[in-house]
Every structure is written in structure tokens, then in C-alpha cells.
Length: 339
Image (cartoon, rainbow, N blue to C red; front, side):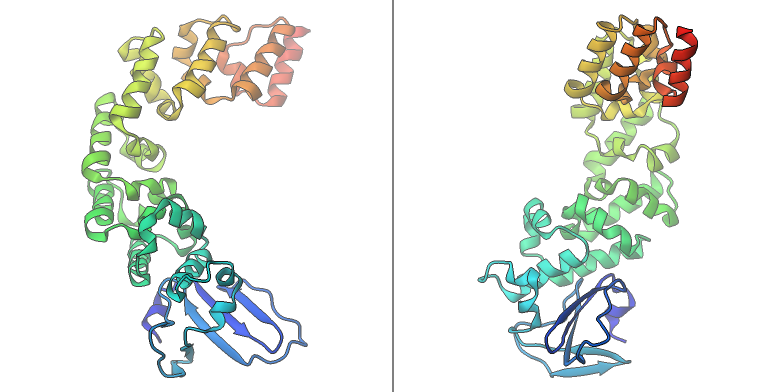
């Protein structure tokens, strides 16, 4: 069997019939009607490493272990594929193949090429090596669209100096066993685009100093904190809480109780919610200290409606009870309080 078939993440088969073309991705495809004419030709394309050469034709047909490979000249069936004909006519066949391969992987090629210009010149061989490396680390084929979609930069990362050090960091610093790499990367693909020296280790050091001692929680639940800039993101959020009137220790305890506080925008989350809390609700800081999760609830869809309904019913509910209760539980509380 061709060596690529051992790990092949995606295979595209474009089959030409007498009057119809059939596009098949993996095992999921629509079967043709029973009346469809017999197939007259086929092209098997490996999207991670296209085997079609646009430089010089090879033998018309080669067969290995029942796997048929058809070598085609530049003017091939691929040029009639919708994803090709929709692109600029001047684009090379190789570049069009790259676009098709990205799309078949489940990646928005336009977005990926825009966010990662290096993809324009990256060879299919290199993209193949990236995919092979990730699969060797336990990442599943079905995870690739989301991972590459969120971080197309990974497709042109240096395996030795950029990707491998991240997995070493997970293993050595976060104590993540290799069979759990997939779980961590799926949770936060941005880990793979972060510098271990400049980002991951400084963030981990800072978080440990704050009191984050549960490495498993950091790895599997709050890994977004590891890719957050210490000087530009983490410290300013803590300072904002202190500026509200909390002591340093109180602010630390709040983020330890609710790590998501580090992910909220000061302008779009903290400020409007605090202004409503202190102004319209007239509540005291002590309640926020005890229930910092307040900032995780929607102001318009949760906080305001429930506060106004409680006020209209003439009842005063603890902050956590008012927001954490289900709709049914909240209605019952209102009914009991107003009765």
C-alpha cells in the first residue's frame, strides 16, 4: 500500500462518469442512482499530500496493493472541480490543489490563507509533515478542522522549534501524560502557537505564584489562562478588581474561585456589570467577594431581568441564589416571596 495511506486523514475521490461527476469525502458521500452510467475514469487525490504532479506526467496508471493511483497532466479533472474553477484562472494547479486539500480537511481555505500568509508558499509535503506529527501525538483526524480552523498558523509551524517544545511543556511542566495530549489541545489549540519560553512558562509561573496549584485544572479546564499574556491581560484584570476596593488577597481569592475572571473584558464585562451591581442593584462588594461568578452571567439576559422581577415582587434574594437558580426554581422563589 502507498505509504501515505497508512495515516491518510482525508481522501478525495473525484470520479468522472459519462454525464455526472461525483464528489466523495472520506466514507461520507451520496450514492449515485442505480441508473448512473458506469465510471469511465478516476482520480485519487491525497489532500494532505497531493500525489498529482503538475510538472511532468508519470506513467498513466500505477497499481499497488489494490489501491489505484491515476497520474494526470496539468489539465486534469481537478480543473473542472467547482473549488478550482471558482478561483483565479492564473493560479497554478499546485496552488489550486492546496486550496482543495484545505477545504476537504474542513478548513476555510480563504480564511486560513488570510490569517497565515505563509501557507501561500508552504509545500504540500510540509503540510503533510505537520499533520503526521499531530497524529503521532494522539490528535485525531476529526479534530483537525477545529484545530487548524482556529489556528491556521500551526500548518506552517516548525515542528522541532515550535510544536515539539509545546508537547514537552505539557508533559514535563503540566504533568500531562502523552495519552491525554489530545484532550488538552482540543480544549485550547492556541497552545500550539504559543512560545514555551516567552508565553507558556511565564504564564504558568505567574499563575502558580497567585495560588493556582492544581496543574490538572490548568491543563484540562483553564488552559486558556496559559496563552494569556501576563503583562497585558492577567495583571490588568487583577488590578481592576483591586481598584474596585478589594484587597490584593481578596482579588486573588476571587480569581482562584472563578478563573474565568481572567478571560473577561474590562470594558465590555467588568465595567457595565459592576456599574449595574453597585448602582441599580445597590449591593455591596462583600457579595461580589463571595460570589465572583456574578461576572460570568449575561447582564441583559440574566442579571437585569431577574433583578427587576425580584424588585417588582418585593423580595431580596442573595446574589448567588438569584442568578444560579434555574428558571423553574426562580419562578418558585418569586412565587413564595410574593405570596
